[in-house]
Length: 441
Image 1 (cartoon, rainbow, N blue to C red):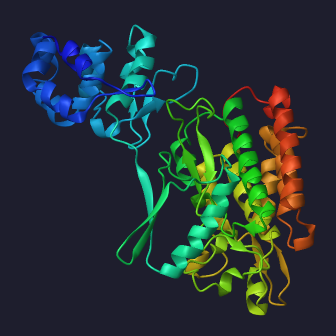
Image 2 (tube, one colour):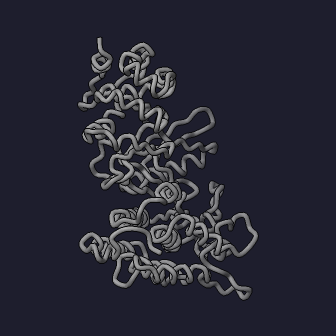
Image 3 (tube, rainbow, N blue to C red):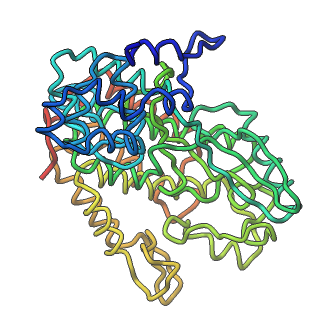
C-alpha cells in the first residue's frame, strides 16, 4: 500500500471536524524502506546518499506532511538545501504578501526556508502550513513556580481579577496546580518570545505601511489592556518590553492579524497591586520594578511609604513606546545605542539607563539622551509633520514622559488619543506612512 494511503487511513477525526495524525503511526509507517520507495534512487544519489536516514532520524514529521500533500520529492531540497528538521515546526510565512510570501520561517529556531518559494503550485504551500498541525506536538505552555503559599494565593486572586476582564491583550491563565509545597501557574506559550525578541527577529524587514499600522494597533491594544486594569482599581507596575509577549497567529484564529498579537503579561503577585498596597513594601514582591522604566516618583514614594498610583504605568508606557518608535524608524542596534546613551552610573540595576536624571539638588529632569532621541526622530521623513508617528511622539513627550505626575494623562485619555491616531492611520496612507517603503535614513 502506498505511504499516502497508509498515513491517510491513520488520520483521527475529532468532534470539531479537525484531524490529527498520531506520532506513533508516523513512527510505524515512515520507515527507511518506505522513504526509499517514495524518493527515486537517482535523486537520492545526486543529493545525499544518507538522505533516507536523515529523514528518518530528524525530519520524519516534515516528510509525512509532504506525503499527505503529495509533494514528496520536495523533501530533497528542504533537507539538503534548507536543512529543515522536525524541530523547526511549526512554520509561518515570512511576509504576508510580496516576494517573500512563500518563504517560510520557523518561530522556534528562526531559520528560513526558501525552497517553498520555488514550488510550482503555490496552493501546496498553504496546504503544508495547514497539514503541519496534524502531528503537532503542542500545545506548549509556560509554567511559573511559586514556593510560598501566601504568595500563591495572592497572585492567584490577582490573576483571577485579570481573567475577569477577558481582554485579548492580557495574558490568559490556563490553570493552577500544586505538587507538594510548590504551586504552579500555567499560561499559554508565546511562540514569538517577548517584544525585544520581536524587534530582533524582524529587524531586517522593510518598514512597510503594514508593519507600522500593526505596531500602532498593538500599542493601542496594550493601552486598552492597561485601561481595563486601571478600571479595576489596579495597576501593572512593571511595564517593559520583556513583559510584552508576542503570540503568533494560530492556524485557526481568524481574529488575529498575520503578525500575531502583543499581550501584556507578568501581571502576578509582584507586578499588580491594589492601589492601597505599596509595591516596595509588599513582602511577596521579590523582584522590584525594572529601574529602566521606573517612574521618577518611585524612590520618593518608597521612602515615604506611599502607594504608587496608576499614572506610574503611564510613564513606563511612554518609555516603552519611545523605544518601539526608535526601532520602527531605525533598527534594534539604534535601540541598544539609545539605552547605552542613558547610562549614568555604575549600577547593575541601571544597566539599560533610566529615562530621567536626578541632579545633586534632587531636581529631576528628563534625560538629555531622551530629548536628543526625540529630536532625531522628528528629523526623519517617517516622522514628518502630520504623520501618525509624529503624533505618537508628541503624545509620548507631552502626555507620558512628564516628571510631574499630575501632567501625565490617565489611561482613558491616553486610549482616546491613541485611538484617534490609529483610526486616522487606517483611513489615510499618507498620514500613516509618507514613504512607500524602506527604512528611514
